[in-house]
Image (cartoon, rainbow, N blue to C red; front, side, top):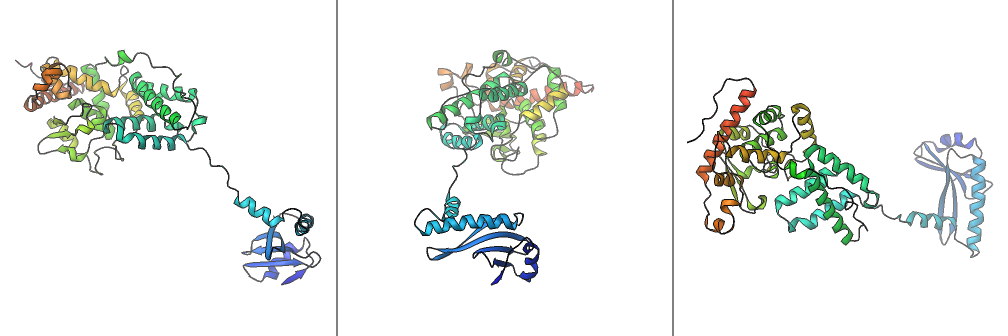
Length: 410
């Protein structure tokens, strides 16, 4: 054990005294238990060592930036506390240190993202797969900016800003659906005791939703969207929606197991359709061409996650910036297909249009639907082929090609 009077010069001399040892302490001759410790050749600290309760205690006073005189004064104070503890009055410094180390700070509040995960786990078995995918998309993607905040930190203004962004990117209907999904989450959170109020309740419903739901793109606008679709998952999804009339979630969440390139069909299970019924979609040659060129990266055709493509808002904004047409939503493409199927020159009968869209209404609703189990597969195939030809024609003409339009049937 090395003992000498510790001074400010000791800070420089200790490295030589240590002689390459990884842990070395120089003890003071005048004040027992006061030492200067060197670890790993670089870490200097002033320490106090004493014996209490049958064991040796060592406490760090300060690092090498503390002067020797200041360290000596601190040691004198602590030694006084040790002596007081030995007399049965108070707790000695070593135990105080251990109590401080053992203290567990209260956990930080869970984030919005963590609560969303818990909510989705609770909801997954209670809703259809397609509905669950929509809820997930709205809560995770639509409100991703809130993910790191606690529920107590989220205010009405935060939610209003995000709803405005969703409306701008996808229209008022999408904003109102996102608002509904978030409000239901808060209702659940209140029931779980996670928060006391629902800040979504006082946000504004988006106006103009009904008008937005009537939007049908013109032939020129259809061609503009098609020609400006990016060479990406998003662009391929929009084109397939235009070719099939499917819902966004049905194509965005498409699985390779649902596609039969030989039979030229997509078969959606009831768990992924709005009416809960299996749905067979005939594929035109144009649709087959798009699917056959997509590289297989997993079970899902699009995106990198189990639920298919995520992050719809940014590519929509990018497309709008290039296309420069009147405000539209992805769902408007489905409505546009339904309208164009019925119009000249495609001219498909209403019940076949409904069959193409997997609608249970009109000709297949009520008692009529109970007895009319016809799937109209040949008729659906012909209808979508005629529509694909017309779509190809208007796109080619918009590109400046000299092509002949589809002749009106009958």
